[in-house]
Length: 111
Image 1 (cartoon, rainbow, N blue to C red):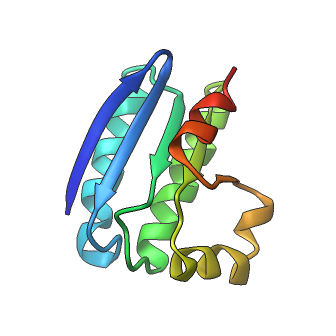
Image 2: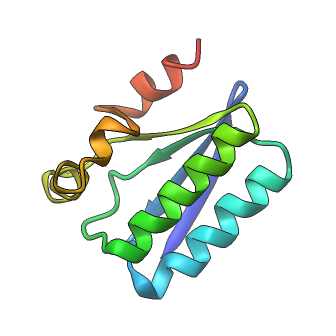
């Protein structure tokens, strides 16, 4: 999995490309953990490049969201594919996590 990280004002944007599954969950955990450790608590994860996500990948996003909220921030998601959105609806996490149709909308939600 390739993960790009950029800054948009005070928001850190994380863009994974590939499957977010058991094989890549540790990489996502390391990336998000390092950002949170560095004080980057306003996170947007753009899932537009993620075609498949399993429970391990989902678990890393939920864990990072909890840590970000504990530190006074949040983790917001955007650009979910139909398949990925179905995972969030099935687990009812769409009620717990902020989901946005585009990266721009997710970044703007911090203003």
